[in-house]
Length: 337
Image (cartoon, rainbow, N blue to C red; front, side, top):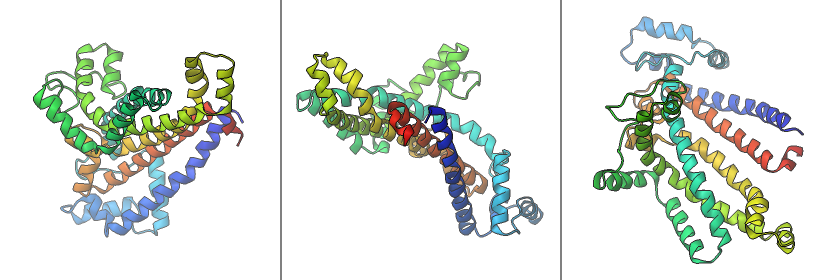
């Protein structure tokens, strides 16, 4: 099975997942919220406003009919109007989601750059001081809650050392780069705004480090155990018997197979990063979708809650798709299954 056909098959399999999750969310929201029209309009809305919402969203129809209209509106880009700020929910998500995406991507790059090499070195020097140190670091990282790591980093790096800022996405006296993708670092590079680039990098290091600690520890431990298993296989012993250099055996023949479980875990972890940045964004005053979702819940902003739920579902589904595709790329035999 070719890679494109494999991707197309996986995309088709995601459709029932999306329908199932949105249907469950839709049903739960109608069970929890006694009067969705009142929740959408706000507690102080006039009766005619509530009646208008009830008519627009067909809330007097059977629940299945309501769900049909809901999915139709989602597909056409009408995700509702937030009663909290009066803006279309989809526009709000477009505004806040790039900040979360940028934070999650930066954290994942840190995880890959540190966690995987550390796991390889740990396996290569098994039961030696470097292996013990690596296992101690990864276990400490896994055991430290992200919110505690965030507070410690703020206390040490910002308060005592004064090296990096503790809040915000860019300095107050620096103008954000012209919007192209919504990602400040990428937009700064594309527009050649080096002042904004430096400020953005300084602001993202602490929240991204807090977010990456957990996945970094997991990546290092899984890479180590996977490498040890691969290094004990017959084809590796054959490669060594032929006299191949040890670095070629490890980095050319063993690492590719050893990365399969690590890649799967990291891809899934990336989806949860996009959904789980609420605490980190709150601590670092990061203007992302996590803070937007928190405000939506606190303000009983029904359309925003539904919109962020759909966005989170899409994030998890797409990250799983990336895991499947990467898995098939690393091991072509999977496409034949």
